[in-house]
Image (cartoon, rainbow, N blue to C red; front, side, top):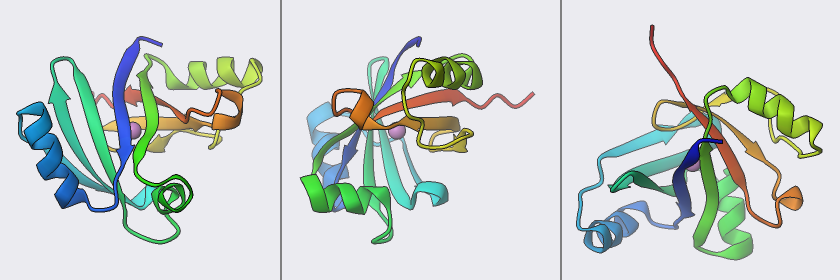
Length: 135
Ligand code: CO
């Protein structure tokens, strides 16, 4: 794992949350994106080297809708940047962690992503992400 790439925050109203985080971080949201695979709309902010991702559900079946129903708004996941997501997935699987997908999925912000089940990570949903490089 190279570094924390971003922290994901589940919100019920993305536009309202964008206003709040623009004020909080004193910077504009640099990207919004609809991620079909996760049924979410996302908004990204930079704070120095770090990023914040806000996530709003686009369907009642979205993992974010389920999270909000259970826990309400708040920190949803911590994402770690990796150089080789397939190698990390294999390493973590061999260590006994439970991967939420068998192969990486196309995530937001030009990344391939895979999530780890929070039951094995002390209650924290962990995202692995690797930048997609267009050769
Ligand atoms: Co994320």
